[in-house]
Length: 122
Image (cartoon, rainbow, N blue to C red; front, side):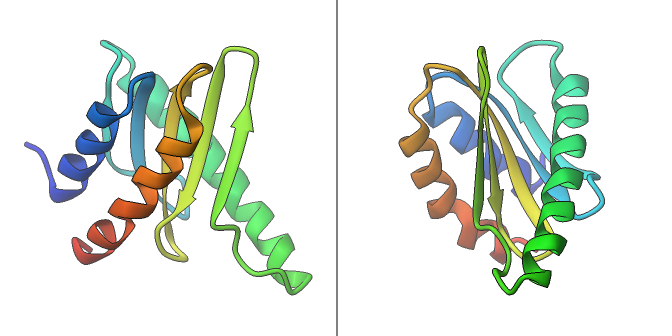
């Protein structure tokens, strides 16, 4: 059964060539909902999202301590993949996994567009 969060994530993944999947995750790294574009990749996607969410919130705490506030986005580029962490609220973010050649700017724009819808579904 799909949730409103899953439906919104599916729109992002389907609209973005090179997207591997997206996870709506809370501040503890717990997946609220996810969409995988790669067969049999849901478990790996959840694990990836959990680890990066925890890292994001640890960095958030340090940055807040120095008066910088919460990061809106974090982009991680690796040899074979890109990861985009996008803050939806102070307690929730989207972790988007992308192929290395996926259009990062389009991904950022799509997540900015669906942010209000994700907040509205909470």
